[in-house]
Amino acid sequence: MPYRAPVDDFTFLFDHVVGLDQVRATERFEEASSDVTAAILTEAGKMCEEVMAPLQRNGDLKPAHLENGVVRTSPGFAEGFKAIADGGWIGITADPEHGGMGLPMALNTAVNDMMSASCLALQLAPLMGQGQIEALEHHASDALKETYLPKLISGEWTGTMNLTEPQAGSDVGALSTKAEDNGDGSFSITGQKIYITWGDNDFAANVCHLVLARLPGAPAGTKGISLFLVPKYIPDADGNPGKANSLKVVSLEHKLGLHGSPTCVMQYDGAQGWLVGPEQGGMAAMFTMMNNARLGVGTQGVGIAEGAFQHALAYALDRKQGKTQGPTGSIVDHADVRRMLASMKADVFAARAIALSCAVAIDMHTATGAPEWKARAAFLTPIAKAFGTDVGIDVAQQGVQVHGGMGFIEETGAAQFCRDVRVTSIYEGTNGIQAMDLVARKMMDGGEAAHALIDAIEEQAEAARERFPRMGEAVWQASENLREATEWLVSQKDMEDRFAGAVPYLRAFARVLGGHLHLKAALADAVGGPREKLARFYIQRLLPEHEGLLVYAQAGAKALMALSADELAA
Image 1 (cartoon, rainbow, N blue to C red):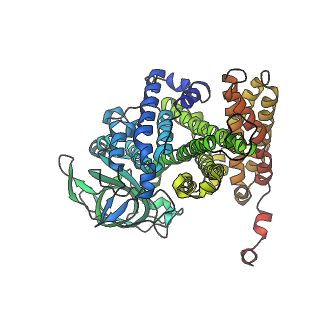
Image 2: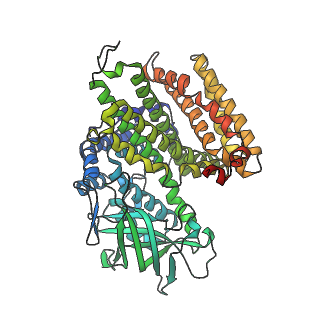
Image 3: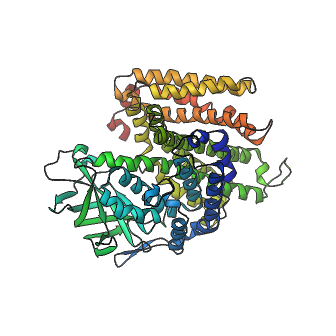
């Protein structure tokens, strides 16, 4: 499918909206100059347009399949992954000591956005590698780092994350996979894992699995879980793939979408693995990988939304149907079609700006160690993940609607965006879990991180009133509404009352953040420019949604739980 990398949008966001200049001003990221940023975006965008986008339909029509125990990937995916690896795009944020670029997470997020838009099924492979790289950098022994990191960063080897079991999904602590000490520094891992993204392939020399398992005598629940690195082939004395390990792909999942991405059922039968981090420290190490992945998955939603929007816009500009008042003579001039396209574009901008703001907060904490940046990054992560993927689903659905009846026909490709993006609101913690995390763990500070963000929104809205009085007032009032709802949530001692309104609260927070970021874009635009017009559309038509959401968020759990399970089934 044709795809145009939105390089100019990323440049504008970095320079005028999300504050990449703060990141560049730190000693840690001083090499991420505007010239370096431009070169990264341009080259990555070119690779996405010319190499990855042509593979999008191929992966859907000619899925990965299991052949004699080996995963055979979709035609062209091996060459596509090689282009990603050769470009250095797997190791953008990785430590230069092991071959990485050492650049900001914000740049990595932009590149992942473009890769997701062009071919999400393939982008999942480097995303898994990036998460494993970060987990090993933070938690692995020096020996493991020296053996695995250079190969993972170069793309010679690929990585996976093994959490889920048939009886242990979101409740990871219910896992039954066992680990036994071999007495030589290694462990034997036995158990089965499901939903393992890119659990195998036919182009990497080795596949490295991070596996959660429990040692004998370890406590029940998440506190007793350890993390192990279990390779497909055990490295020899020189660090090269040696004998095959005792693991295998049992089957591939039959999925709604992402057919080019093999999702495996993995069986470990006394497979040799090595401890990552301390015993019973598995969840801390895995959360390093999962937090990376949560921002990455939110970015996948944004990327799919961009791809779906571009696809729908191209169709609308070409399709002639009915009489219109506009100059093109195509359906883009019908008011309702224009409404859908403007909504899609405005939400893509908002979700992308939130994801990049989260990445900038991560970079600032990495560079400075300041606790306020850590708190902001932690608070924005569930919002970026949930809102980004919700927008991906919404925009993909609207893309089908813009196509009309042709959107329901597979040959147009509009439906693939819907099928591919649907899982993003489920994996790496469902969006409901993200919302519950936001109103519980992320408010254990009494709402301090939330109020700091609301303060920044109000300050900027006040400053915008001189140039844009109506838009500035609307964003300021929305932030006050959000502040009142936040205070109400923090005051609730019964967590069920928080959880009952968690999803609408997260959505409302994202809506207000979107208004704030659109307003910043309008202030940086020329008078009457396209970004000012888009900001007016968002603030007038989409931002008001927050009011109803906040009413829902403060309704409590009593009425929600009043309808019994039997009554639901009646």
